[in-house]
Length: 290
Image 1 (tube, one colour):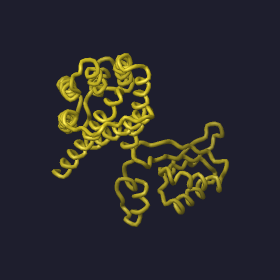
Image 2 (cartoon, helix red, strand yellow; image 1 turned 135 degrees about the vertical axis):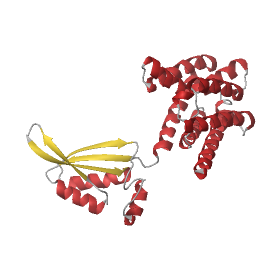
Image 3 (cartoon, one colour; image 1 turned 90 degrees about the horizontal axis):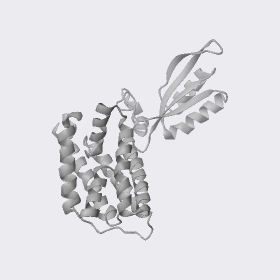
Image 4 (cartoon, helix red, strand yellow; image 1 turned 90 degrees about the vertical axis):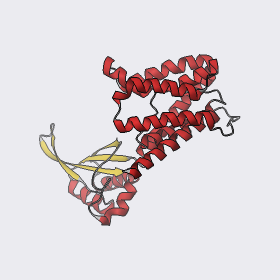
């Protein structure tokens, strides 16, 4: 248990450190904006010269006092650590400013580091508090979807920021926010996202045999029914990684080019072959999938 706590604390501290470097060394020197509470702190800094560290701590503390009941106890603890450490890092950690001649490099760099930082904090079972909690409150009392609430809140923050920093900087801020979301998803889902394939074919036995032999993945056979043909169908279901997808598609085309195939993305896979193994002889292959 203690090892887990130390690991999570380390992740939260590393994540907030990276986040703070991005704000102090890239966002502020390039007069860019951000979404969420960070955007509000930047707005206060640009207009009134209020310390981002101070405003970040006060705003997030107020949000936590109002919305703590929407978080699990473990998340509350690590979120408090994140708020305190982020405020301290914003106040005391300064690296040389990165002000590139190419204006696009600023938002690309800040978006990358902020997404990386937030992702690491979340991996440590924490959050950066902020508008995420407000979105949960809006969802409960107004019935608005969390994603829609977050979008509205970010827009309400970015619009006044754009008035202050100018249209060009505002557009660059949108680029930074987009990069942040992509990097955050990358950190959370990993570099090798999983895919689920469903195959409907009269040669399902041959296809399943070849996939097991050449790709070494388990396959689930589902019972299907063709409403138009009024015939029972065997449907193959297999979860693989992105690298194995090409190999599986090749196998299907070789055996039955008329097979009906769907491929969908999967955010997370739990269970045998992905989070634990019953057959140790499959360790190498399954580690590749993870």
